[in-house]
Image 1 (cartoon, helix red, strand yellow):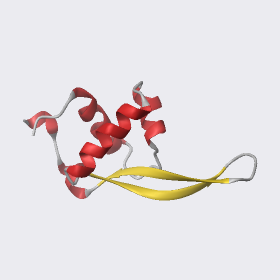
Image 2 (cartoon, helix red, strand yellow):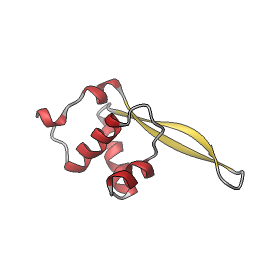
Image 3 (spheres, one colour):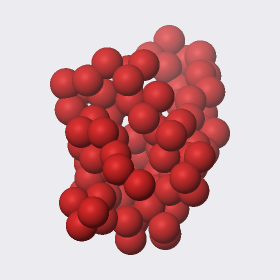
Image 4 (spheres, helix red, strand yellow):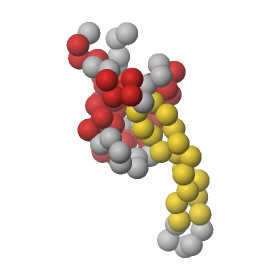
Length: 85
């Protein structure tokens, strides 16, 4: 199951930051990738059973609330080592 360079970057970043509340925008900013790229990569990880998007809500500076999706890896995603292929 060969993975693209960007997929490996996203997977490893999420492994390194396991337990943190991260959105696709957070990951994109940290890795210097576009948000759409991270979203596409993460959708692929989800299809392989490696990731889940969890709904959450944040409060904005103006007091309004916004629904977001937090990215996290499953146990299979945490255990997967693409470099071993």
